[in-house]
Image (cartoon, rainbow, N blue to C red; front, side, top):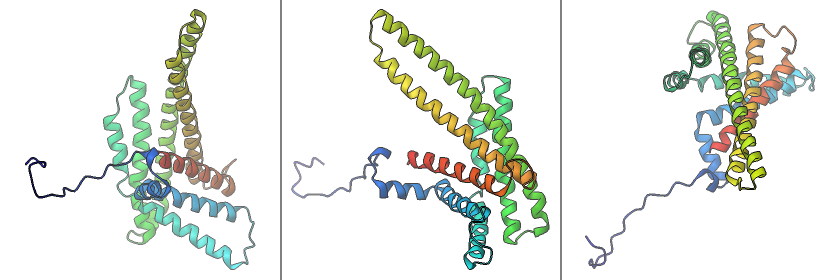
Length: 257
């Protein structure tokens, strides 16, 4: 019916326009962030490793009541985080299925990266069940060891893939620099190349940050494998690595909201 010809005004509910990430204010972005499983998980990770740093630094005497409460809090948060990993291995299965491989090396590294992480998340479900009491706790130690090995192997694959990506980004950056240099010599415009170079450099920086994050997480996995014995595998250094990884992940998730 033509609305101009109708004598009755009919109110049609309009579908709200979803705002783009940059258009959202702080509270709207916070709502979106907290609706994500990874968002809440990384906030718990920050609180856990910040607490572990306080405990590992011996800043508080063991006799203080707050020290015992912090230990209890840290343990509780650690168990809570494992619940957020239920079914998370599916994202690695899908990532592997949807990946496009340009070489046998790329295929092998992807299987190691996604397969290792996927196995880690799968086993972590049973670690959570063991710690929560549904599975006999005697299996907890072996499950945690298997989980740590799978996580460590996964990070080795992930770091290798990202290093390959970093080399390709470097090659693209060199080509753009060469194009800009030629444009300057010829006296022609190079504004588009300049914008592309800026984006490539931002991508390169984020890739480097992601590699450092994987190194930090890999260090924690190695500490679990070696029971905290070894250089840089002490409680304080591992806790600092965990906090660094959590902050990087939180920033990534926040930017995507």
